[in-house]
Image 1 (tube, rainbow, N blue to C red):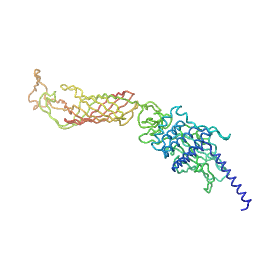
Image 2: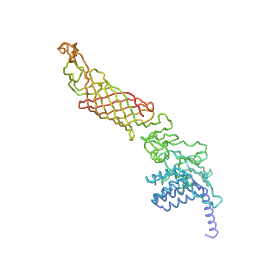
Image 3: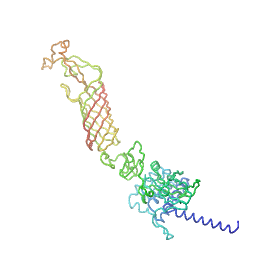
Image 4: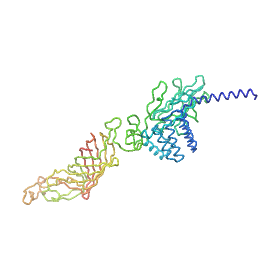
Length: 554
């Protein structure tokens, strides 16, 4: 090769190099550079190159200082610095300091799920609790570095379009949590462009997924949709765009696999809402709720936060969860959600039931005389076979106390048979120690609850035993004796016999199992229906009570 040829070749290489450098400079605005440095640092951390990871993150921090960048870019840099200090160097003090700075700047940033540990998450919660005052966050902003050239930007600028002879694309740098990410690019109509492919991955993943972009408004469009955002709930998305010709050969890219663009997933946008040309903003995604939390998408301003998500108040969390130490955990807080009304909950301390009813049971066989049945005149012994028997009208009065264990109550119930037959004691009292567990329903101000009830105690139930007796004649009031007329009444025709109802006492110990339904009409008042099954001994009976009444709670 002669000297002239070498000179021409050298000029060509220099010109091509300058063109490539100019393209890269245009593509890399400061926020993009910061995110790329963070991605490179995470890669180094994953390769156990701790020193390289720290060096890259320090470069990102310096770049934020030079360009007066705060908010999400600097917060994510501090978050990753804390992660590397803790996971790589075991320095919990330095990690806590970086986490605190990150929370002061943006308390919505989250640790990379592939690199975090429970200990890191606990440290981050502690840092978030510390970052609650202006004094605690006074040292968060980095010291600005004096610009070396007048062209150095002094404030955050929107991402500049990336362009070359084939493709033009404006990178998306932020998207709100649980919203699809629309991406748009234009290609040169003079080029042989056959297809445009979007390559994307969630932050922390190694492999990019492919998504063909479709022709749209003179360009190409694709959307990273809810399947990705609700399944993985990523902290960010890496992506780049490739342009292929009719022979499926690569013509150009916007971003690369080595240096992709990164979309930060945030709770509060500091940039414009990403949207395709001449299109409305995308609608919010809905989580696929687990069976134990079917209302996970309820909330005042969108999807609620599930177990382990960061929160600032109980209202941020889904139903049956509270905000504890900065994260959502199972629990009850007596809060009102979005629509008010029946969604407002009332954490009662005491519940009172007042009810009445009747029932029936299976009783054992037995033999009785006037000592058992005071309304018997003949004095003969009568008996019954084992079988069904009705019980008397009864009432119940119970007091239940709520325990710290959710849905569980303990208390005591008094049961008494109403005195509707002459000669018998006024009441057959029962005192039962009860425990109840809420099977269905919540502590809503209005609504239905179904409770399982267990009891054990001193129990007496009066069962009705019909018997034949003589018609009462010749009462001797001096000794309270009766004479049946005629004396052989039992052997005469049936007109001399009278059927009376005796009441046998079953018990005096018993075990109870049943179901109570409360229909709450207000915070303190409701209706009560119940079915109770009792096993009584040593005088055996299997009894079933039906009752209805009112319920009170305070």
